[in-house]
Image (cartoon, rainbow, N blue to C red; front, side):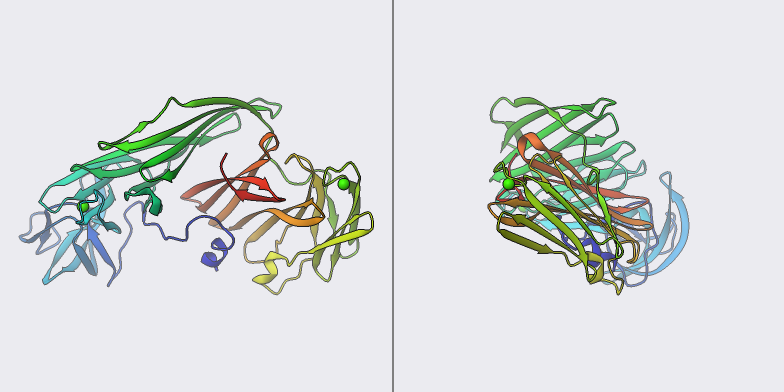
Length: 426
Ligand SMILES: [Ca+2]
Ligand SMILES: [Ca+2]
């Protein structure tokens, strides 16, 4: 249920990321890899035991059974009885990882083996073996980490993306391997009551990186100022360098949306609401009727002699037998153009889910402009935080998912086009 919920309607990749966290118990038949080079496979679970074999970086290791715990290199982990190829012996857990990648990172036609694992200080260590016995090493910050291959076929070179949660926010690093060494581009992000720092990157052309850094401060009254730095970088001679001076801009930003203002609660006994507003900006008001009919929310816009209707199939009914018998509806202008807002509190399903939908009315058509959903079933959760930018007719959706112990965020900026917030350039 968890996976299917998180996969529903989310823009982020469905790729399962290796999670490298505190040492955890591995189980029989699990396949992992050596995280270091020349790792000693021991006859017994002890660093004093005979060496059966020396294993290269990224060797495939099949767990036979867990063994005794031992503190080594300042860190507690468990020995495992393992099979590696024809050999059988013992490896300490700190030498193993579930994150291994085989890719031609430097484009010479031969794949390299890369691994990522936590070091004794919980710093992430990425190693890439070139195949000639040399291993390149890079460190990429501390904390719970996710490592994935950057999925941008147009990029023209594979890179690894390391995403880490930190005490104050998030740390991201992009790693590449050229000329026998690992390079990295990294940045920190945070968000608080009084400010934020966010970085977005995309790859508009091969070996080209478009980066937008946004740093904001917010006053007690909710008003804020955000400084943007926009720069294009090109990859040449083993590193990313700006192709031109950065563009810097400053702009005022509004308070993040907290849902419909002055919303009306619909229940089976108070099942309709009506308001009037000029939704499409033609200086004439439309009437909006919202009803709770047969456990569905029906929105009708009456514009002169025509009426246009949209019916919601409540999200939680897809997953449970419970019927929608409560919805919050209203009308908001925080996005800039007036939008109809419908909130399905959906508490009745496993965990709790809230779905907020914004509807636009333009050119005689009633459309779903944006949908945001938050779901929690302790300790797991997934939330969409929505911040409208009325001046640019855009919205930023920050999606956070994970558990009490670790989470990750993805962001998307969408621009209102044809009545729908579509993914687009800023
Ligand atoms: Ca290669
Ligand atoms: Ca109108």
